[in-house]
Picture 1: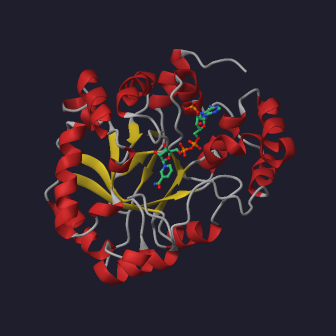
Picture 2 (picture 1 turned 90 degrees about the vertical axis):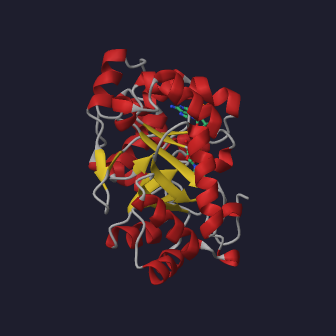
Length: 294
Ligand SMILES: NC(=O)c1ccc[n+]([C@@H]2O[C@H](COP(=O)([O-])OP(=O)(O)OC[C@H]3O[C@@H](n4cnc5c(N)ncnc54)[C@H](OP(=O)(O)O)[C@@H]3O)[C@@H](O)[C@H]2O)c1
């Protein structure tokens, strides 16, 4: 497998599909995730990704690296003007800051750290049903959207019962539900529920943090060889073909480029079905019913 040329990467970035959301906004289908990269380390990683053609960054207050992301945006000029308008920037509210007043205050802090005037998407990070405050939090989010400091409102890790509860309390469905989703944990009930209500699905840990790269006793590897691409590209291409938004994380620029280069091949129907068949009870992350990210 050869590394894609800069030209291939630039072309892929220029023709990146955008998914139209229920609020009319359009999100680039591939973004860079920045979980588990420290504040100092994230600046060169984000700068490299922007240079490689990424125009979508997925961060969170809870990743404790918003200031580092902000430095990358400021140093490359992606924090204002035309470059800013071409970038999709997501951040998420810490669970400990849920609630109306606390969410507004936390948002000001995130915006200052990111050194931008607005974010494209603000998300509730976990539903914390054992301490439910998402209805009040959402009302603060709506205020931020009215003030045009946030364009799109989303949630993460919401199960259908949490989406229903939020809808009952606010009259709105979020534009996006970001959930753990990869070949060995497909959450079809959640995906189906979202699709039926016009909620776009965004896959986090799209490769199960790397664990799915050799899933299915070599199934992924075999398909990769057939197309002369990497196992990562096979999995990410499967997500793209499913219409899912993906935010793979890599600190390595060659892998960042690889993860963007998904449009020069297609899975056959049989290959796509073989990956569908890898679904199983293999969660890589946490259970939304019990977890809080603090
Ligand atoms: N909302 C939530 O609750 C939530 C939870 C978890 C994650 N997320 C978001 O989703 C993003 C992605 O999820 P994730 O980081 O958990 O998992 P992931 O993207 O499935 O996997 C990342 C791992 O795969 C490796 N990798 C990346 N590209 C590769 C390639 N082409 N070939 C081989 N290995 C590769 C990375 O290593 P290197 O970095 O060393 O390349 C890293 O170890 C996060 O960064 C975060 O933004 C959100």
